Amino acid sequence: MGKTRHGAPAHRARGHPDPPRRAEEPSRLSRRAARPPPPPPPHPRLDHASAPADSATPAGLEPSFGVWSPAALALRNRDARSEVVPRARRAYAGRMADTVLVERTGAVATLTVNRPDKLNALNVEVLRELSRPFHGLLEAAEPVRAAVLTGAGKAFVAGADIAAMSELSVAEAKRFSDMGHRLLAMLEAAPFPVIAAVNGFALGGGLELALACDFIYASANAKLGQPEVNLGVIPGFGGTQRLMRRVGAARARELVYTGQQLTAAEAAAMGLVNKVLPPESLLEEAHKTARTLADKGPLAVAAAKRVMTRAEDVPLGVACELEAQAFAALFGSDDQKLGMRAFLARTPAVFTGR
Ligand code: COA
Image (cartoon, rainbow, N blue to C red; front, side):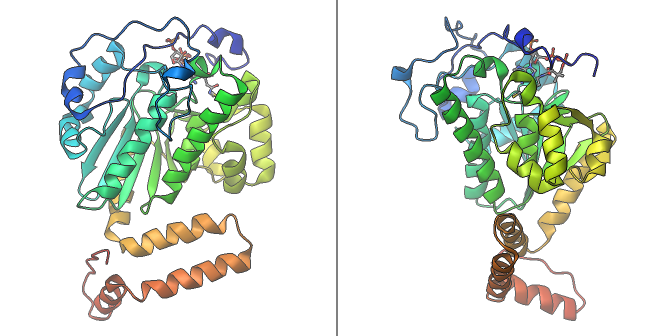
């Protein structure tokens, strides 16, 4: 990557804070696009006194830096997927923001981080807006059974927002990190699989986000890495830990200590990426797999995800006991009866999730 600017973090300090933005209310969504952006704040440091009492919000980080920009608006409107935005807005009235687009096709949801002018860098707002659809999807009358997470434009997510982070105090950095950890824990705890469709740069927080998904499909031109050491910091959203669990301690250490960027093929060779796909078929393939997952017994898939996620943190004996309990519990479900009877009757099983 000749154009990579890692190694010269000082260059990045030029990033300007975006204008502040208030929490959305349902009725504002349709009006927002026509509204000019408010003027930028004088300084990216935040006014603690103005922080809201939202427990999920790091106090002092509230007037988030990343907001709607005309460029992002234009790109979103060009995006074929913008067709679905009005539907998603109706489905999640008041809970969807423009920095994250939500599409629902049957039991499969697609979440797109939509801040392409900043390569989808994660600021407070994006972190918050990414968690909102998850609540919506969990509450939806027709449950989601699989999700695909991707990014708009040429990046999946190029990391946490360096401009927003550049002036953080120690306490603010801790709250920012905590907020990222909460989001990623929510992704891992979702009772349906989430596929990361890495369509370009997945660096820093972007790779961490992908690592919190169940597995990764990547386009052939994707770049993945944890370049934080180039900025004088370390991964702050679980990268040091999840990367070790995914690719082993030695490889993870090398990646984190060097900050090197992997090609999709290199990432696949070490088991970080499941499939490398031509860019034009990445989403199609991810959706195909998501639809396959959605047809399986949803209680079984959720139980497998829960057990396999928990198993990474406990001794083998405990993990096997967790598995035995989850296995047995499924025998109390309609789906187990339905699935096994369907097999014996040589008919396809149509699971109900009960
Ligand atoms: N945080 C904030 N802004 C970011 C960003 C990040 N992590 N990554 C990219 N951007 C912004 C750039 O500042 C630029 O904004 P500008 O046009 O207002 O200056 C815009 O996104 C496009 O990025 P640019 O660097 O011009 O694209 P590129 O194709 O030349 O390089 C990367 C792409 C990914 C190699 C480069 O942007 C980069 O190294 N980003 C930082 C990656 C990183 O260190 N992530 C870990 C953060 S902890």
